[in-house]
Image 1: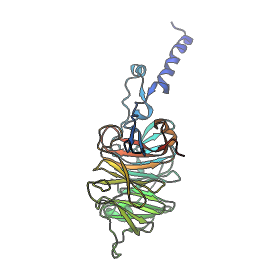
Image 2: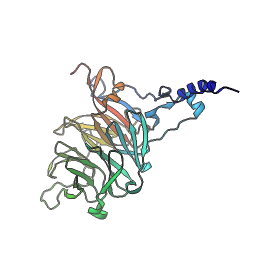
Image 3: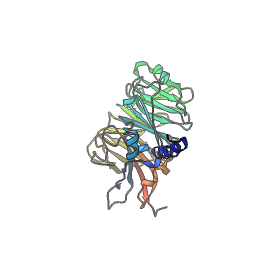
Image 4: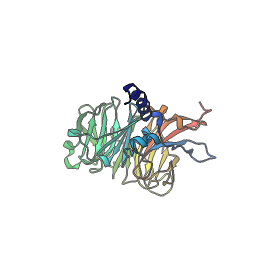
Length: 359
């Protein structure tokens, strides 16, 4: 019979080997894909993508699979909205009636599927505020569902204010207000952030010559401006905080600078506007006066391309986790996340880059 001490020294190293992070291999998804293509100066680099938990935690080694079996991972089903906070990525996924949560520091992948008062039916978009609260638009229960930084249910808003005429699609927040797109009424609802009281909605149809919204889907707030994707008018329309129309970007058409199926939007610190077009399957970038700067992506043929993209999200806080994928010729300015509802790359990560020699 083997002595206990012998068993310890025989089994313990195997246990460490099977559970060691160095024996889990993340699949390489790092071809050098840059936009625009040479000889133009590169502005965007494709960095990596996520399709399942295995792209976060890594695959089991051959030895681990022999002993523990194959790890099939948890797939990302049909993502739409995406947001980041405190080193985590939150991905709305209609197939699980919840969110996929990636913890970048811990390299972990979990699924957030709340029950009880926080139960989700059709989570489409999400955003976090400076306190870490998570706001989720649920087009199934017709409410915005709110959770605290620890993912505990806080409250829900919207349905009791507008009854059956509320179907929230996207949301943005400031220090004092919440804006929610409501295509049922073709308006944007404005709520007091603290009390969740409905303050107003815009455009105001009673105002003469008011610019209307015909199918408001996605929304973004920055520097006192509200950007709204009007899917029914093939434009991104810009308003001030009081709902007064400022201008629009784009028009219907099949040329660059025009839109076929505009969806997710985001704005960087230079007030450049990023617009997903699910028809072109790319993201177009416009400057602060609406001039087209460039586009990236395209119908899926390989990494960096897109397959029915839905949302674009800009992040300045998690650069350290992605610098390893940046070509040595460049330095990383900020991150650009794009969700794809189909294809092998459900969440693609790009970097806004500058030549390494430029300060």
